[in-house]
Length: 111
Image (cartoon, rainbow, N blue to C red; front, side):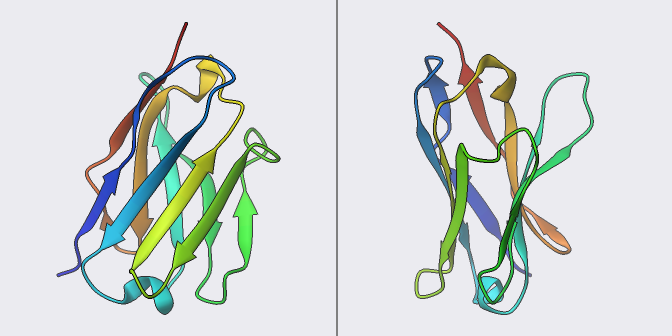
């Protein structure tokens, strides 16, 4: 059983930045695609960014140019650097490596 544990969420003002981390209990991120998703109240879960085992990345249109996904295979950790945050980025952010999910971390962007 793989466990994914997210951290780094919090309250930030518009225009601010946060870095989320997702620590995996095993070496799964070195062999599988990892992704960040988010879900705001009343909305479906949406894909934010993904990174393959070979470190190819892709992003949702709403975060392109502002968010960066990366990983450190030696630490079994995936990161999401979020810059220029907007109120519409407010959501619970989840890390996923099929078929596993983390518990989520809340990101709130508000003045």
